[in-house]
Image 1: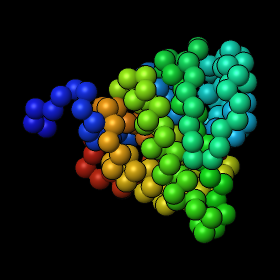
Image 2: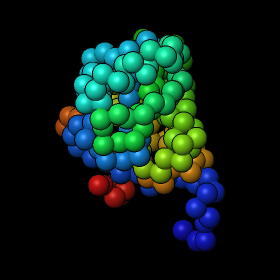
Image 3: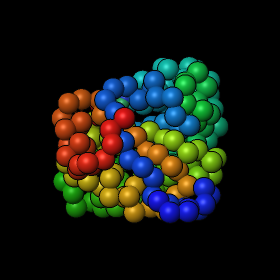
Length: 179
Ligand code: ADP
């Protein structure tokens, strides 16, 4: 909109995709990691499997990652150039700062993307699997945080791995172009 310089912070275009984030050919995919950064179940396991064993070797050198923070690695065998590993909160009923920690995951991931000039990035529904965060509340945090965070990322894709997640994001994103 208007004459915006490419390097000025702005709000990214938001999109929605169905399927496996490991096949997304974007500059960076975000991993819903655990604090060890050494791999796990769910999307974390899928990303490590697709990236190959070099990823865990690299992660070993990074140490652990606190909840709400994010660290970046190469994508190795992935189509994506980078993987941004962020640690979502475990859902404990909603009174343990979960929403702020989850929002921090999205903000910190965008900050890591900016540091490497990644323009197209893809997020899974952080914390909504094994960590138990209710999907409606988590998707609301995801969308509102990305919409309100100044970044040089141009396009964000939310990747839904199941129908319920898709439906919730589609509802929140409303008229947003889905791609
Ligand atoms: P967490 O521990 O943060 O809850 P999970 O990996 O268990 O992380 O789940 C987070 C979300 O990622 C869930 O919606 C889950 O269905 C989804 N997911 C699992 N595998 C993939 C994948 N290969 N691509 C995209 N999303 C995935």
